[in-house]
Image (cartoon, rainbow, N blue to C red; front, side):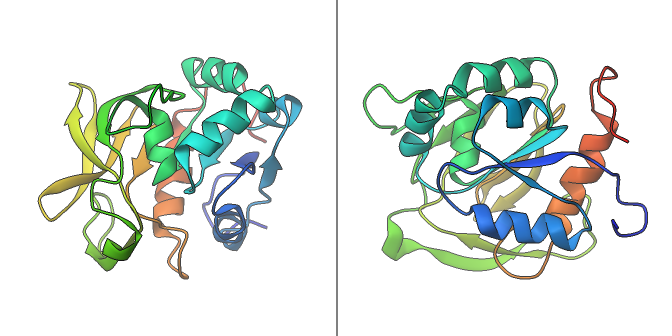
Length: 207
């Protein structure tokens, strides 16, 4: 059963590449029963979705291979709540700087992100991040992380690190540069789930 006051949602984690197991564990610890999404019919059954960290160019290629890219774009356009972390942030961004040649995104989030902005793998770091809506800082894990270079008028900045924007929200979409799935602190996931429940399209049954 979910924790007290946790909305009951059909929650999916895109399971093509990246930190799938860690996100599943975080959502499960909230009492949810997340589904690993690899097929269009699994996506269609979800009320919310997590796009995990990994390699953004690999994930976008696999989305096409598994016939998920256009269905996912359509669901996001229709109001699907999505949490994107690290590479997931890049996938949700409408614009990418320092991307691979011809790099595509899923889009939907009116931001410009800079890929690998904090540096290469050896430049990975950890530290406290104050996130709007949470009483105490979270432990941010930044691994080849992007940052948000520009935000659209409707984008809410949720967190900064070193003066750079590292967490944002726009409507039903939320994205972080860091990896909230690392460790036992699931407050970012809880923040997303609570916000998602308030932004579900009314045509979806979340019971």
